[in-house]
Length: 87
Image 1 (cartoon, helix red, strand yellow):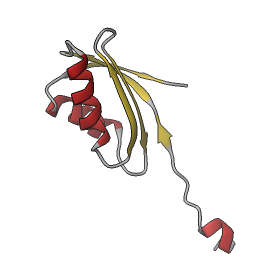
Image 2 (cartoon, helix red, strand yellow):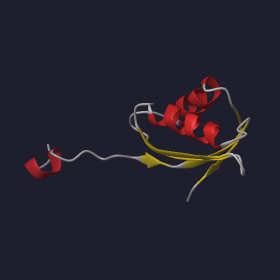
Image 3 (cartoon, rainbow, N blue to C red):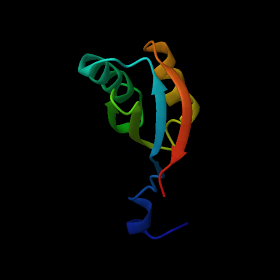
């Protein structure tokens, strides 16, 4: 058992992959996808860019995972065509 100070803090494992997404055509798509991702438990940030087809997000790996993020993209009406891990 750790000290009382150690027990008050939990380790959050943040992940921040960049997804390549097809189907976004405008800023409305960017906003729609960003909102959909931010509504997923554990997602702290999400930004989409229709010009580059990139979606960058940060999520708590102890709460959600990349598969859930990708599923949310698909449910929102877009296609994930690639993933790049941010170092």
